[in-house]
Length: 181
Image 1 (cartoon, rainbow, N blue to C red):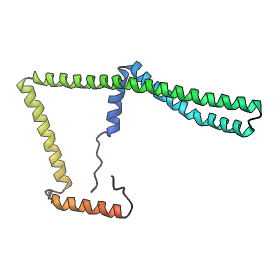
Image 2 (cartoon, one colour):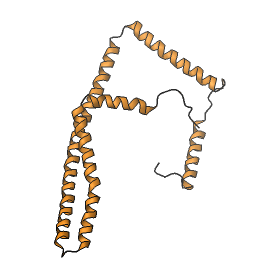
Image 3 (cartoon, helix red, strand yellow):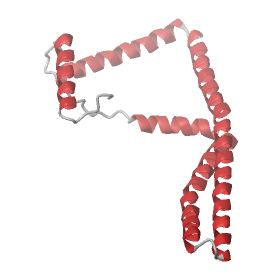
Image 4 (cartoon, one colour):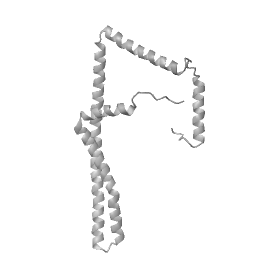
């Protein structure tokens, strides 16, 4: 069973502008969250570099004072990077809670305002809005009937469910799908 592609916008093209619009309403919060988490990631990325320096210094020998100093510097850098990563990650994660709560509050406020506006709608405007929705439903129904050449949709849901289960079981037995999907 395949879904036909139509001219509806993809979900990502609808979601990203919505998200960015809300992020732009609180640029400081977005910058703190992004900066904290990105900074922590960059610090994490540099740790293997200094681990390599530490290994190089350790293999040079403990008797060499330059190697000992290089090992201590590399170890200090690893500890410093770990501390910086931990602090930046904490800042980012602590900032994300009020950031997302404000976004959820704004979305709820917008929905409530839309609901209140709809309450004050005149009966004629409400009738027009519902009439447009029914007309659109009629257009969709006619398009489906045209696509199916006037044939009604005859589905036996128990057979459909059983065939889906059999396909899944065959895919699991064949090693194609993970049983947890």
